[in-house]
Amino acid sequence: MTLPRKAAIAAYKERKSVAGIFAIRCQSPPQAWVGQTPDLEKIQNRIWFTLRQGSHPCRSLQAAWTTHGTDSFSFEECERLEEKESAYVRDALLKERVVYWRKQLNAEAV
Image (tube, rainbow, N blue to C red; front, top):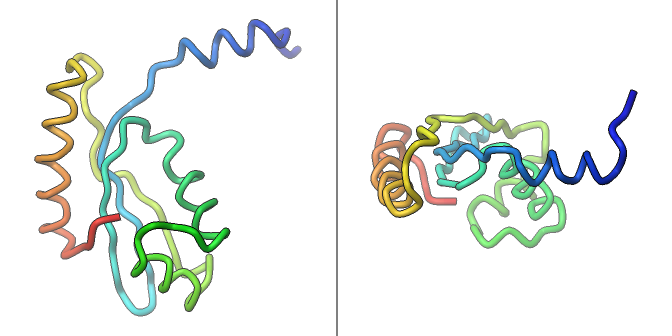
């Protein structure tokens, strides 16, 4: 049984978004890009869409995607942040953690 349209919209608006750090990897040649987002649930679709359209702002990522194709890429969550943090604390923590993960994975910024 499906929810009525208004109830489904209300449930979507009330859902909690989870902030965090993510990585995009290309298998050949091995490359990685790391980014931060306030909503881990939506970011992969957004990035894949812009890459398919040829309009992603990260030129190295777009070039690799165009050269190697969709099947060479994977998306992974590196870290999720606690929901308890205020927006200010969350943003500062995201900035700190994205630097850490870029160093760990020898990755570029998304």
